[in-house]
Length: 51
Length: 563
Image (tube, rainbow over all chains, first blue to last red; front, side):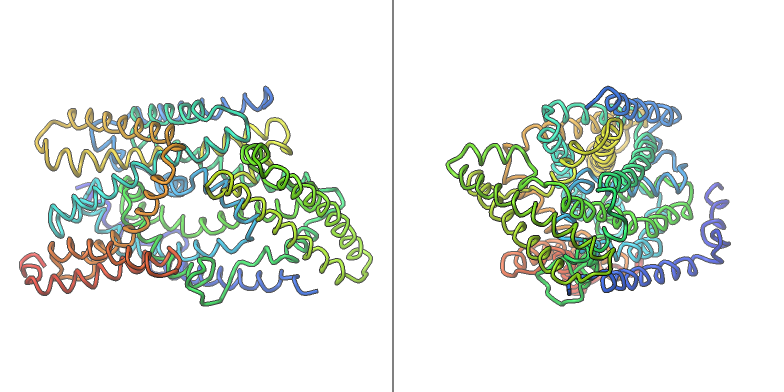
């Protein structure tokens, strides 16, 4: 019974500001790619090794 | 340490024990002991997942690594957010909905008892010995830096962790992990602030970034394709992906955490929390190492940070040679300091920078070479590779951190060790009782009997960890062998789970022999190639799935009624 009550919470509905789990997962993927790009930019911009 | 440091330190232990006892009072029965009656909130689980992964050596070792090599280690962590998504979609629903206690239970339902028992056995052997290293590694560092008896450090950390884990089970572990992880966050922030505060007053944030950049210390992404280098984007993303998937998806010390959630949704949220926080946290930890690198442009760094190694080499026949290296190092530091201050002044005046940069790079390189030579001398005298990187950050703490904050930072190191050890103990205990004792010896005993067996098992593994830690110095190459063997089968374990999730017709014969083939192939690759160990996980997982699928097909596949 308890499990049946939890099921709707697990599989549907909003997750905070995200409309669905898929939207949240997509955000994580974009976040990961953005971090890689950001770190690459960071690597290039903060390289002062060439006089 | 001063009186205020001891007060902070004792406050930490009091808070941990008090918190553990308070949160464990409602635990009844084996489900309460191992799964917290599946009532824990996602935020606590998320912090516990993070605290379990972050051991003391992660905290002090990676800062030392960044001091020597810069930020490139961050690349190993980059695939972790994607791993969390895959866990949420593929792994967690299987584990959670079946109401398992351990990850390995899944393998009996999906394949057979021998596959479950073999994987659980591999987990027990590797993690049982690794738990000792979790205690030993920070104890040896603190004994050298603080002058504390390493046996006392091991016993204090070990006994307190065993007691609260035995009494409170997973609930106590997760809630203490919460305060330990929050303490680590405070420690990371405090370390950054302290480092800036101990720099000369005229050195600003921009100067720190600039000095680090001269030696490419901020380089976080390396796009080269060298598979023998573990610090490239490709090695990090491919090898790190399989390593993280194996660790978070099949290691009971992590799986057990997300099985304690109130709901599947809460399990997933705990992992997604990690997806967003883990990489920035690791970035902050590594930044401490780069800040240390910059800091030691203004303060005299020791040639070797581990005073025990210095004492040994100075007392040996190579002592004169070592002292000569130290004198050269001191002289070069003085000249580099002048060049660095000159560079900063030229920046402020808008003057010419190139000659200063070139000289600083030259000094950095020569000082690094002297450090390598000193390490070689130590290796020659001791007959073992120097692990000086682990001493860089603790050495700084003891010398430069003010009273009160030193106690906080030492408490952070203890918290990192204890939050990993307590998770190992509950995981080892659950695999012992559920996958072996209940499965093979006493399948029909009462809940009270299993609870007692679980506490005894927790005590056994805790005592084992303490004994291994106490004798780790004498075990030497055995410890290295255990760590090496662990890296050999991690990817193969992942392969068995992927075979179960993804190949519908795979059967027990395919899984069992696929697992053995996976471990064997990793062994061959390790012995015959120079590729980074991170790729072992890829090889193991791919071979298990390939061989497992093939053997399953040849042996008739899985009966259609259970597919």
